[in-house]
Amino acid sequence: MQEKKEEDLQQVLNKVSQVGIDEVGRGSVFGPVFSAVVVLTKKNRITLKKLGVTDSKKLTQKKRQILFPKILLLSSDYGIGQSSSREIDKFGIRYATELSMIRALKKLKEKPSEIIVDGPLLLRPWDGIQKNIISGDSKFIAISSASIIAKVSRDNLMERLEKKFPGYLLSKNKGYGTREHLAIIKKNGITNLHRKSFLRKSNLI
Image (cartoon, rainbow, N blue to C red; front, side):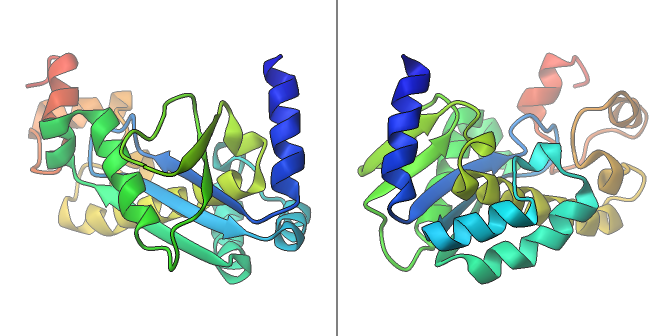
């Protein structure tokens, strides 16, 4: 039944521009959560699919970097938003993720009539029409494109922050709680960009 609904939705969305939104960094222990929204015509969705656009997690870092400027060039519009580690600690990860999505959407030139959101959770602050698609970053090119834009943007920030916080290997772990990263935190302590609420769960603070 769910597959049939998604097939019907795909047929409708194939006729019009798709507005896809996705986040990255939700499970990280350091730094902001990023979201991106990408608006694509049917023609440019086909082009990007041929170029290899799919869920960012299925692509190498090099491939994502190659696709990033192509997506920006072929998008009718796009927006990038983020929510800080301080906001994550204050409001919780779901609300902070929603903040980053709303911030991305507000950067579009026009409010979209409908958005498709990756995952099962409603974007609660959004007052327009939305469709939630589980594994949408593998099914809809606009969501796949948004996942790549968000991922590359956040990874680039992590590489810049490595210079500010040397020793935490941020360009390698991208702020995620790898065993190596957690061991470094235990040795060197936390920075002001670590998510304290996440690290309490790991008994590191």
